[in-house]
Length: 143
Image (cartoon, rainbow, N blue to C red):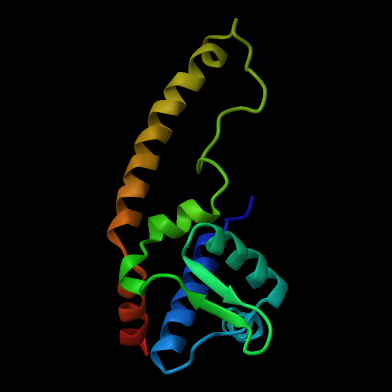
């Protein structure tokens, strides 16, 4: 199984747009953002469409088309981004019900659900404490 990079790519795109706007540009194109992320502009457009639905980004069509932030970087947390692009919980239980006659099959669901609930709570708390402004500050320190 591979790790999901959607949160990282979404945070990258939004942070890049925020920095680009601070440098005096009104909108950024998906092609410009895709160059920074090193991916296809279609990937960026699809991701930004989800972020637009969540009220984190906005787009302009026609002449001067492109993407902009709907809120300041300091007002966007990683939890906001996560909730905008994540499809469901981080971990899931079995797709089919395990054998209820088996001692492990019977008890694995509740045991794992308790662990997963705690992990989800901890993760959400950490993501809520970090803004994209924090991310940009750390990015700029590293350069």
